[in-house]
Image (cartoon, rainbow, N blue to C red; front, side, top):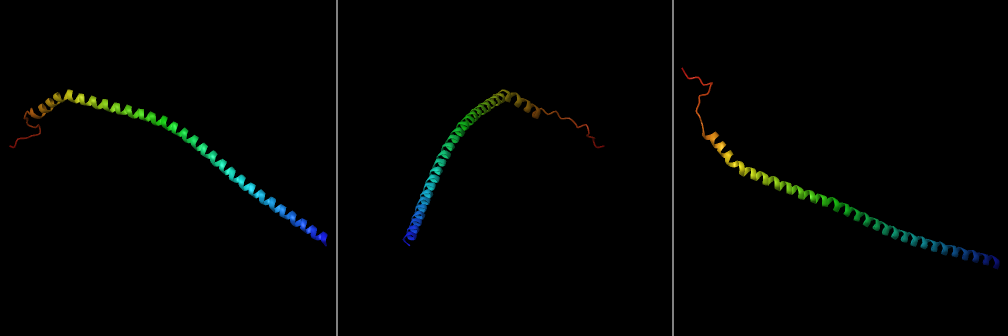
Length: 118
């Protein structure tokens, strides 16, 4: 009977060691998963920062050229306004004379369709 109880004790001890090894393996797996998650998060953050830096560089290039376009358009608009103003001042006097002469110099005439009453 003692040999049977020793055999049972050995089986129980073996079962306990197996449980301990299983628990230890689960803990290692949990630690490894946690470490892998942290590494992945760090890699994602690094990639995100890299892509944001590239985006900012491209945005600066594009916005810089748009800023130049804006300045050119502003300059062209100012030049066009200056040309129109100078043209207005040059031609104002002659146009006023033409308008006044057209309005004021009336030569009364009878309309060709007018028939005097008989």
